[in-house]
Image (cartoon, rainbow, N blue to C red):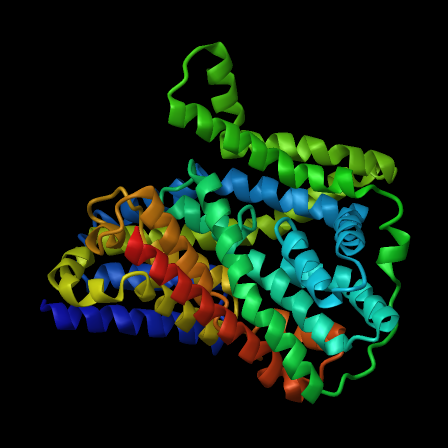
Length: 450
């Protein structure tokens, strides 16, 4: 089978996956798993090996990054249900003040979406956005777009949000989450700069629509828990992972160093973060609801883990089929694209089927583990933790390019942000395009120098 034929088969497989999810509404788990099986058969993986290949890919996620996704989702659910997310929003609003309302909403979104899904985050915080617009006389459209941009940026770039944390695990960076968090924070903030100015400019041309009044959770919940307690579950794991990285970098030894290394492992750090969220439940007298919160969190995390596992199966099939050898033959051409290659794959998947998480996990699975000599990562020269983390960033940038009518977040922003659906493409869609292109430009420049 020639290289061109192999590439065409791979392109058709991606197209089938997109059509199945976007047009036929097949669940991404079944679509990715089905395409993986067909690809294994067409590319000549021995029949006797296929069950082991499928099982290996699935088990690698459940035994690795699965717990991180579960605990991250559970922490977000606790912050959402107890009003902790709103408390964080109020804390940032007080810090930034009325003089910079657009900046306040953007930073609020950026922080809230680290533990909470961007869809839920927008619904939770949009009452604050409308209230701030009334108090400052600012355009509610500008503030809604600023909030949407902040939420979306951290949603695709910063663990423990499920998409980027799954990508890190799939690509062998589960013990380098601090590096991914640091890069995600930098690039997500940088891509918000053009979004900040765009939101202010486009809002002058868009007439806001009246949003039906809803219960203002900012008044009900935001006064019941302190911002300090709300920020604790986010800051604690970052500090623990940072200390663990320092111990590893300095090659310290002894019982104390071993303990810090243990506490700095992502799974352990997030378990401790979950314990730090318990005071929020106690303060709100909601400990009796903890079981229900956990149950719903598992129902949320389950599909993400399954989709991630299906994506890992696809990655294993790509390795087992010898597809990477074809890529190596064409490495001179593809290496010119560098990190733009995974960006384009993620952008195509995102634009076609709407889900950023599916786009991130699927693209990460195609790229594979950076330390595996038989992976796409290795074929394209991404063989160090830093280069692999930059690929995770490139995938995140692609997964925000673009949000339009097939994306549920698009409709949440339109509905709760007071933006007419007809204006969606020149506001939300154009803004996410600008953010994605800005991010990949900066990521590509960084990759070129490191």
